[in-house]
Amino acid sequence: MTPKLKVGDLLIGKVLEIQPNGALIGFPEGGVGFLHASEIPDEDAHPGERNLSVDQELLVKVIGSDRLERPALSLRRVTDQDREAIAFHREAIAFHSALATRSVATPLPEKPEERIEWRLQAWMKSTEASLARLRRRRAARTSQHLELD
Image (tube, rainbow, N blue to C red; front, side, top):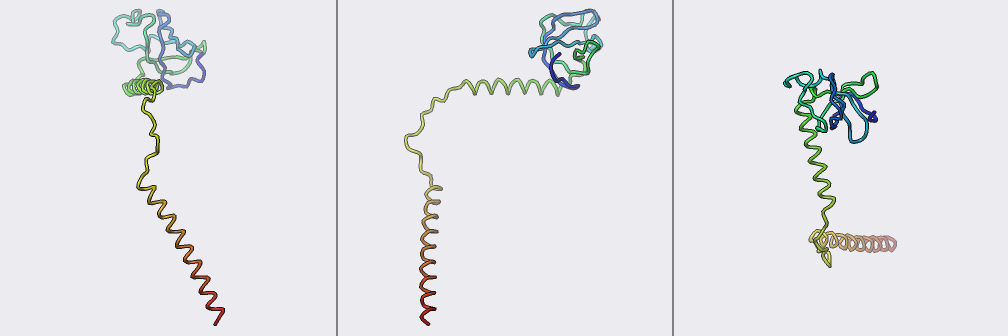
């Protein structure tokens, strides 16, 4: 059984075997689930021929487990939002892998660019240090003046 499956989980699997009462679906992570014929949409022609073919990839939803402890699956309960979410997820994975394989061809600048914010920050630090020195001198002079009086 596929590990840690919960009711409501979406899975992408391939049809391994078509049976009179449904189909066995295999998952890339390992494990097999059962898609009962009643969970295949009614738009298909005959109950035995549900427009499924071996090696067909399907998006299915987990709705429980059967007596053999396999995940019970449904095609009928997969919503358009579920399909959009899976399409978005696949697109994000493709984008991430494309970014991961992309090499950085831009050379680094030899000398870091000096920004005006950095210059202002340095000026503020030196100004504050100068003011602190002036205040210390003034305090020292004031205390000397008070001692003399």
